[in-house]
Every structure is written in structure tokens, then in C-alpha cells.
Image (cartoon, helix red, strand yellow):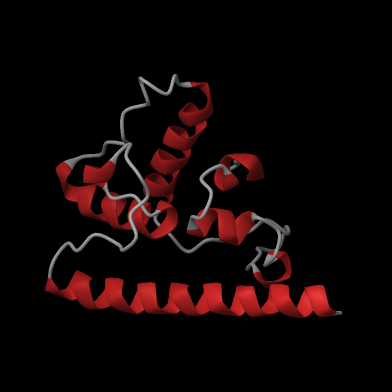
Length: 135
């Protein structure tokens, strides 16, 4: 999937912005051609990218429809959307969620672990910012 970095970084405070904003450039996995590699469902990621491409050209009072997929894949899309953008399907196009939506009891444990790791990443980033300012 080819997508502009600006498209992925347009939603401030999201995991996509954090991953592609430049700070972690050297840590991103790459394929043999040097392209960034994400181990996610390609069809679902494409649906999210397509939706994100519509965001900047849509009026604020008429945002784009949330990505849609068949019933078999809607939970995959919802989880990936929540993971990358902080928005669950039911939250479109509202404010960013502070926690990932819970799909089932397994999802609750996974979401909790992801949120804890995400918070740790934010704390590390804040510490790195302090060190950069002092040196």
C-alpha cells in the first residue's frame, strides 16, 4: 500500500502519527526495498487509508463515512482502526477514544495490555524530550 506520510500523521495523538511522525524512523521494520513494513491485514489497512484520504477534503459538518467491510471482517477493521487511530467503528467521526473499545473478554485483556504499553511509550517519549532539551 502506498500512502503519503502526511496522510498517516494527520490525526494528532494517534499511534499512526507516533509511528510515522519521524521520531521512530530508524526503528520501523522495512522490506528489502526499504519500504516500511506493517504486519497488519492489508485490506483493512487500505480501508483505513482510503478513509483518511477523504478526511482533509471533506467538510467538517459532513465527514466521510467510516470504512465499511463485510460482516466477516468488521471486527478486524474495528480493532485495527482503534489500535491505529484511537477510534472504534461506533465512534466515527467523533473525538479520539482514550481507551481502545472492548470487543469481547479476550479483547479486554488485549486492549488493556496495549493501552499500558502505549502509555509506557508516551512516558519514554516524554523522557527523551527532556533529555534532548538538556543536551
